[in-house]
Image 1 (cartoon, rainbow, N blue to C red):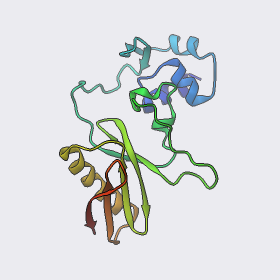
Image 2: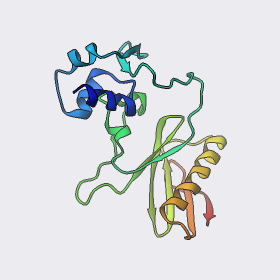
Image 3: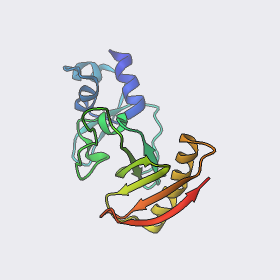
Length: 173
């Protein structure tokens, strides 16, 4: 049990006991967590969070680059309280049937939209209007994603406006 909790915190910490229980499906973990040699923090809400004592801790003003997450990514699914990543409490896109077909993306560590590939086009759907700097940084990351998914293929990258009207388009090799 100790190793399970330490691995979880290594991937998703800092986290509350409720976060660990939501991810693992196990209950009554408070005693286990409290006996481990962990560092504690208070969230802005006052909630007690635990983390590995030697985990890296960048300062609060350190920007996090945009990141594209795949379908069913554990980052959005592994917390009971998802407001630290998803302040608007949007439902994580998990369509029924054949599985998810929509990835998500983060800007500055927060969930800002979804993405999918259709007909050699990477479609990026932000929830809100992006700043020019965020848009440009997201496009740089999108180029790398497209090259990773299908090297030697020309992809279009489309960043839609929040109302799904096409915004800017770029071809990528």
